[in-house]
Image 1 (spheres, helix red, strand yellow):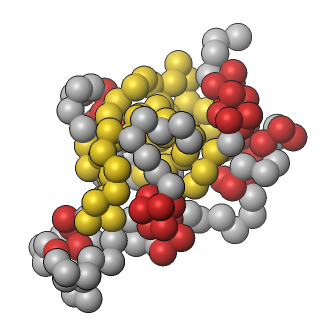
Image 2: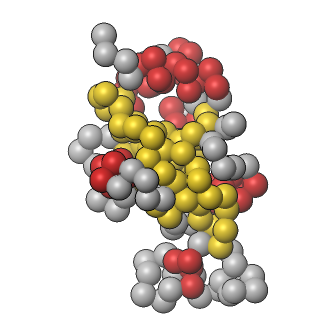
Length: 155
């Protein structure tokens, strides 16, 4: 099993959306960065655990956990000309983008804020805290996952 951090804007897809329908998979679509796409396509697998990270909002940080329940498949939004993720260069025979399906695991007992993550020496190699990293899909090591999970425990 691998561990990941997926960034999302909560007004588009939040941990609360997952929690409202905990047994219903949600399509994780709209990734339009090649490196992030490659992680989804080549490395993300069924059973992997994912931190859901809220970005571009008032309360930025890790809000919860989801699990991958369907591995990479062609992102349907790339073919929908009414979608903000439409890609006119994508075809059914040559899709350019992939999606995965995620399912709710849990909400964090408290939001784990970015500034808290940045202040831990043990997370210095976490891609999220490295300067200039804007990927929406990034790997998390087992040690980093355990450190972050320890942060979510009430004091």
